[in-house]
Image: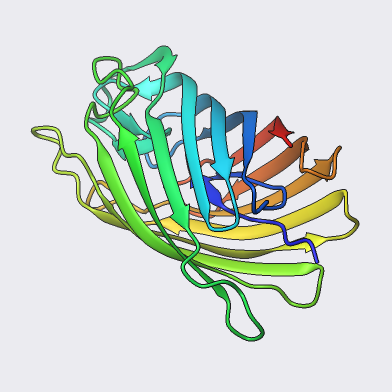
Amino acid sequence: MRKYKTGLCLLIASPALAWGSAQASGQFTIGDLPAFYQGSFGTNSNLNIFYNSTYFQYQNSTLRLKLTVPELSVSGLPNGATLSGGGIASRGQTNTGTHSASGIGDIWLAAHYTAIQNQGLVPSVVPFAKVKFGTASAAQGLGTGRNDYEFGVGLNDNIGTRIFPFAHLAYRIVGNPPGDNLQNIWTYNLGSSFEVTPRNIFTAMFSGAQSEQPGYSGPADLILAWNYNLTSAGSGIQLFVDKGLTNGSPDYGIGLGVQYVFS
C-alpha cells in the first residue's frame, strides 16, 4: 500500500501540503508554491499578500526535514502593523495610513519524526519542531525580526487504502519585540486526504491558531487542495483554495505550485 504524507507547513493561515510517498532509502524534494491572499486580517485596511515559498525537503520512512524560504510582497499594510510568517502578528494604530513592502520572508526549518508507525487502529505518532527565523524586515513590517519556536505532535492514520485522516496540535513560543506585547499561541489543524486515483489526491482541512496579539481573533481557515502526481515518486502540481472563517484570516486565498522529487 502506498501511503501519502500530509505534513503541513503553516504559512499565512494556509499550508503548503507536502505530498508523495515516503521511501526507506530517503528522497529529496524541491518545490515552489506561489500563493495570493486578500482580506483585512482584523485591521481597518484591505491587505493583498503575495507569498511565494520555495522549499527543500529530505524524507525517509521516519524523518522529514524541510527548509522553507519565502518571498513576500504586501500592499495595504497599516503603518506600524507587523506580519509574522505571512500572517498578522500586530496591527499597529488605526488611521495611520498604509504602505506597500516586499522582500524575503521569515525562513522556516521543520523536523518531523515518526515515533510510532501506523498499525491497525493505532495511528502514526509524529512529534515535530519548527523554527521561524526572523529574517523578514521588521523596519518594513514584513516580520517581527524575532525567532519563533514551535513544538507539537501529529497523528496520521489511514482508513482502507484511499483515505488518510490527520490532526496536528502545536505550541508556538513567539518572539516578542519591545512594545508589541505578543503572546505565545496554540496552532492546530485536522482533515483528511483522499486518493481518488494514484495520480489524483484531494485534501480537505480546517486550520486555526490563537492570535499573537491579545484581544483579536485568531485565524481559522477551511482549505481544499488538489495534488496531481506526474510521477510515481510524487513529482507533480498542487492547487489549493483557502476560505477564511474569522476576521483574523484572509477573506480568501489561492495557490498553485509544483514540486520535483529526486528518486
